[in-house]
Image (cartoon, rainbow, N blue to C red; front, side, top):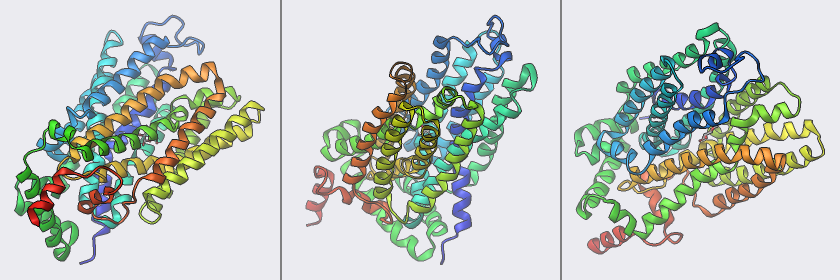
Length: 471
Ligand code: BGC
């Protein structure tokens, strides 16, 4: 039976509605800070004067509340518990409910900024859960040949969310006193859609088997893979699960005392950390300030940058299963490094055209390589027994990196200015080296991926004891 591409497109789109929320959340706040009615509401004097800014201390508390929420919820102590007990779909649902409350608190905020801060924290918790569960769910549901494409839709929706947030800022934000509340309220629409549509998606077959729901797992696999392929995958998943259960339910002690798992945690954590340290969010968060320094219209340029981000993500989706993850990691690292170098030189000699072109090219290379690939890779490299825990580790590394870039970038931009690009040149060499070192996973079924690390990472004592049992 041929695989049903339309069904997988449906699964990818509905499950990735959560990442649309992620993108919306990244995209809307910076502009709301510049809105006169918002500044009036928080009690600033002369709020409609563009020179009057929301105090930077207040901005960092409100912005930081979101990052802290995301770090906490995606952390190994919270996300894996949800992923194992409530399942991948259940975790997405919980993320959706939290998002709804977080956004509702922000848009109904009364009195002081505290309710906005609390709402941002709840929204952060939600995005932490969503970013740990969506790529994992997508990679477990997808057939090996389409896994990269399907999981990349997660990244595509983040970029679309960022671009939509900017459209809302152009169109709805100027609608008077309530404008900023409307922008936040608009986020409730995709969130409600997601909450209604999620129940129509299949459960992850891996999770069903872990729960001992074998009949449901088999039926789900038949629907996802066709009759013939389903029975082979079902037997394999069941065998792996039986072996894992015979060794015992994993505890953090087991994970930390297993040298293979410790190393995998570092490798996956680095993928997400390097995705942040390459510097994409310097342009996502501080792009308007950089464009302004070149006397360009910050709102228009930032919108064009977001559209470029969306368009270039399609290149990643089209190439990730053909060229493979390693090539994208390496191409991305080397090309982003070159863009930063030329941007730094261009900025030094005040060649604005070159400086600006390099920023756009950087975004093209990020969106077509490291943007989707870091999420795809960290959802597929772990053995199923520890997958949810290790996804928690790598996702929280992404959020820690995100917070670090958010805090350090303005300090660098204000002190060494555009020499910041040379720092990014150096971090991107790490991105290239990462791709050069890791094994390729394209087209390999999820159950066989852990063996790709043999010879690169310390041996897995679980596998050894299993081999001993079978010989
Ligand atoms: C990253 C975000 C970034 C976005 C840009 C995501 O993969 O995790 O931090 O803002 O891509 O498109």
